[in-house]
Amino acid sequence: MKQLVILGATGSIGCSTLSVVAQHPDKYQVLALTAATAVDKLFAQCVQVRPRYAAMQDPAAAAELKFRLRQAGLLTEVLAGEQGLIELAAHPDADMVMAAIVGAAGLLPTLAAVEAGKRVLLANKEALVMSGELFMQKVAAHGATLLPIDSEHNAIFQCLPLALQQAAGRGRLAEHGISRLLLTGSGGPFLHRPLASFAEVTPAEAVAHPNWSMGQKISVDSATMMNKGLEFIEARWLFNCSPDDIQVVIHPQSIIHSMVQYSDGSVLAQLGQPDMRTPIAHALAFPERISSPVPPLDFFQLSAFTFSKPEPARYPNLYLAIEACAAGQGATTALNAANEVAVAAFLRGELSFPGISELNQRALAKFAGYDARSLDAILALDHQSRVYAQAQLGKI
Image 1 (cartoon, rainbow, N blue to C red):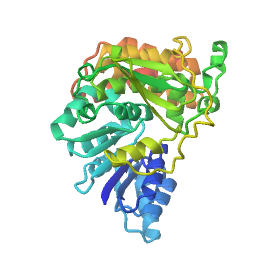
Image 2 (image 1 turned 60 degrees about the vertical axis):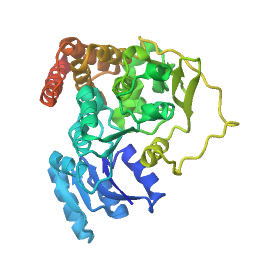
Image 3 (image 1 turned 45 degrees about the horizontal axis):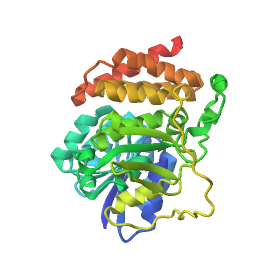
């Protein structure tokens, strides 16, 4: 029985992970669940799977969860605060850690799992966006196993030769006959919306993704294609390549999750339903295969596949992220922080949809030259960029 810790259990990835695990009670046992503030949902999950531990980032929420669990007669031990998440991520009994906390909040717990040499199922792309070089150094130094959960990176991983799968960001694509990674994206809900109407986009429209069921922040990032930009940066570190080795391709049907182009002219693609339980099942069992609740593709029911190049005017956030990737760690750290501020402001109705990219552009211009190699420098720059972005909100 593999012991599993789920960081961010109440989010869409956490819930999908529990769905896959429930099909294999003989293989996986949930050691711990964590969340930020969603007491009701985490309580229900604890009742369902009876973990030994639970943790909530918010101390008041942790106290409420502890009270409710005791009232229900459950013996789950409750930890509080970021330190509680870090302790569970590095717990000696944990075999695998699903790193599914959205945003910068997931960095330190995910690093703790890496430093403890765990098998880390990485769904928190911000960890690599904020600290790619440092993060991958720690993976190598501590003997951790890193498996990508994002559907695009998991697809690329599945299309790589075994030697590169085992290299954990240290192999060289060209030495294995690979010429390019093709990162696919749906284009989000505004692929065909007139650009002149973008100022009228509402949060409800932005979170209504045509193919994927995701949380609000990720859904907005998908609408702006910042999510694809963050994945571009993540791919650069996961697969030890340069920005020139990656190409973003719009594929509205979301059936081809990404591709690997080889120097002999071959292109390998991974296909499947737009359902995160497929990459989760792959990473849980790798290198073996287990069943998931996802139905197989019926090729006789599929529509035609289409592909296009993302328009810079429609997706400025994507190109800001690509620019930041080329500029270095300081640029990607600052851009990620500013984007979290911008998306939160948009969801509160305090910033227009085009204002997200405007705020991100200002932060990138200000911080692109900053160096951020140590963890302290990364966290300081993250904070500095957030303060700057917050101050700029009233000026856009």
